[in-house]
Length: 318
Image 1 (cartoon, rainbow, N blue to C red):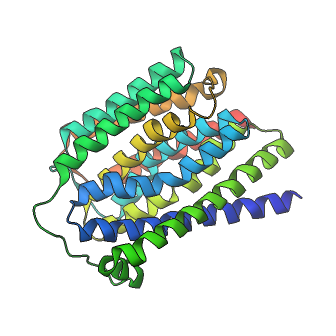
Image 2 (cartoon, rainbow, N blue to C red):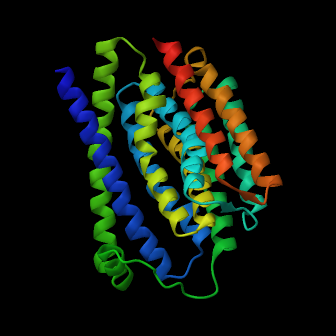
């Protein structure tokens, strides 16, 4: 039975990643077809695609009365995005930060601080969810107005599917997006069910697996996308992907799941993780504000801090 649960977990994560990958390739092709900037594609289009696993996993977890799994997945994914995703991209190529919007950096910092205040002082219910969704809508509107390019962008790819989507966005692109969402949905279902069963078997908390294995698994689309962007020298897409994914995770995912059922933040379980996320966000924001370029040295710094985080979680839960 335990072996079956691990097998279902691997199948679930595979479907989550594959579904998100299909969504990303199709969405990028459509975005390029209608002439939007790389940063907007990374922020909105890829940000949504790479956050879809977290969204479906979190909704499934709330429905199955496991709020720790939902919140732990969001916190763990945002930490992974800042440290592991950026660290992996920097290992491939340096990143020029000169074109990164100060507004996006400030907004990314602000919504994390707002999230920390909410989790310590309030209960997540539909009222808080509505505030999160309003902030999310404002950000999407602001980003769209700031990111429209003046000329159409040609799609540079040798992959068959994105090329077909670019040529026929409605005929090929939309059905592919629907299929990708279905794959991701079933992947999320398998992932949540197997995590709950495995945690019960080993008598470890749902939040530990959510912060580590599930968060890492649902962050694989971000890692893959950022590494590909680094190989193609597209720094705006990398940072936009991190911004977009983190903002989707906090505002859209937690805002949306709050409408399903009210839940409180398990302070005694996730205290270290919240504090660690706070310092990650502060450090990330300061780096983007003061630095003009990141090189491979920062890759080792980010990845070292991520493995320290994993080690601390492991020592706390054994």
